[in-house]
Length: 328
Image 1 (cartoon, helix red, strand yellow):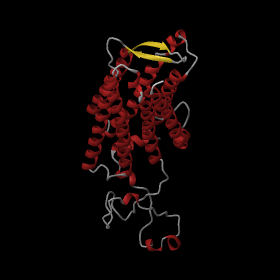
Image 2 (spheres, helix red, strand yellow):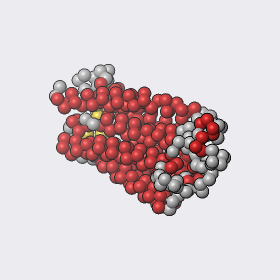
Image 3 (cartoon, one colour):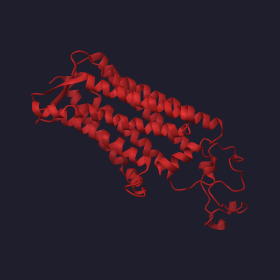
Image 4 (tube, one colour):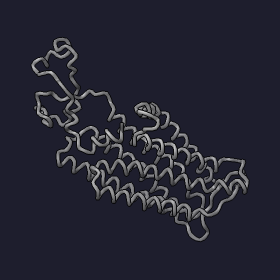
C-alpha cells in the first residue's frame, strides 16, 4: 500500500472522528431544539433543516467509509452499492444549500428578487453537482481486500465541477448576507444586534472552512487527475459541510431562545443609545423588577420600573421572521 493510500485511509478515519466529536459537543443543543417543538408532526423549519443536514451528512460519510474499509464486497454486491456514495454526498450538499437559502432569503426580508435569484442558483448548483458526480463516476470495482471502489470515467472526469460550483454558491451566499445585514444596519432597522453578529460570525466560519476544503479538493483533482489520490479529502469535505451547517442552525437557535436577560429602561426612548455612548447597550446586564431595589440595585431607585422587554422593537423584520417562523 502506498503512502497516499495510507493518507486516504487516515483522512477518512479523521473525518468520522471529527464529525463524532462535534456531534457529541452539539448534541445538548440539538435536544433543546427538539424539545421546543410543539409536536413531532409540527416541526419548525430549523428542526427539519437540522435533521436533514446533520444526518444526510452522516449517512454520506458512513457510506463512504464502509465502501472503502469493508472486506465483504463482491463484484455483484458492489454493483448495487457504489452508486449510493456519490448520490448521498449530493443529498448532503443539497441540505446545506437549503439551510443557507432559507437563512439568506430571511435576511433579505423575503424580497422577491433575492429569493428568486438565490433559489435559482441553488437549483442550478445542485443540478451541476449531481451531473458532475454521476458523469464522472461510471465504473466500480471490488478491491482485492473486499472493498467497493468507484472509478472515474475513462472518457472525461468533471468531478471537480462539484467543488467549483459549491464555491460559487458559498460566495454568493456570503455576498448576499453581507449586503442584507449592511442594508439593515444602514436603514437602522436594527442597532447592530447580537443576533446579526451571531449570523455573520457563523457565516464566516462556514465560508472559511468549506472554502478551504473545496479549494484543497480542487487542487488535488487538478494535480492527480483521474487517480484515487484526488479523493483524499472527499470524506473530510462531507464532514465539514455537515458540521458547519448544523452549527449555523444551532447557534441561531441558542441565541434566539437564550434566557431573557437584556432589557431597556422605560425612561429611554426605543432605539435610543445610552449616555455613556456604549455601542452594545442592549447586551448590558438586566435589572429584574422582582428584586427589591434597596437590596439588589440601590443605585437604580430613581428609575421607573421596567414594564416590558422592548429589545424586539430594535429588531429588523428578517430577525423577527427568522425567530418566529424558523428558529423556534
